[in-house]
Image (cartoon, rainbow, N blue to C red; front, side, top):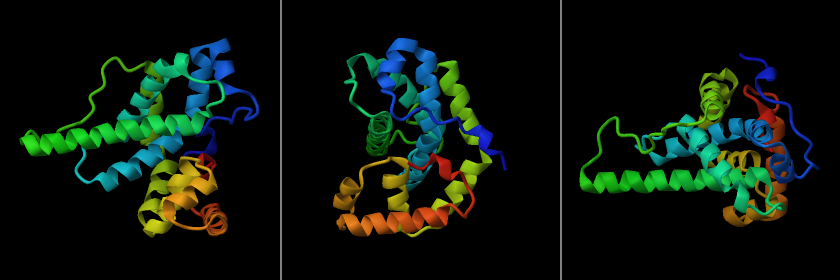
Length: 203
């Protein structure tokens, strides 16, 4: 497997990320995005598989999120945390793809290789990052672990570990108490730490 050096060093969580990006420009945004990209890719793989029949490549989603995020920086409030914001964009991209898939099915336009997102002029950085995610053996091993898990555990990983949602919000979504979610997530995370795949992508 590829070593941990494949995943970038974490930035200072106490530094307002948007102020840094507005000060330092695209290179700073790329560095921050690269930290979240493995989690986005792992999340996309799992969600797309659950969509059944949607021809969307996780690498395309990672590139599209970069493009939309970069375009949306000017209108963003400085208090917005990076990771949840990027995942909101990812969810919108995925939802649009699902809707496109449904329209194509109804109209009879679906084919075995129909893709619901064909990117043009994607930035070199976004393309490079997404291709590296596709080749990352650690991420592939992590995906195999996710596939073998019960739905309840997989949901915890997606919501708590990858999306980084607050435990209160996760509890409300799953219809559980906050204490129960906290304990389950702690136990699950301890288990994951001893298994294959990069646990450093988890929030």
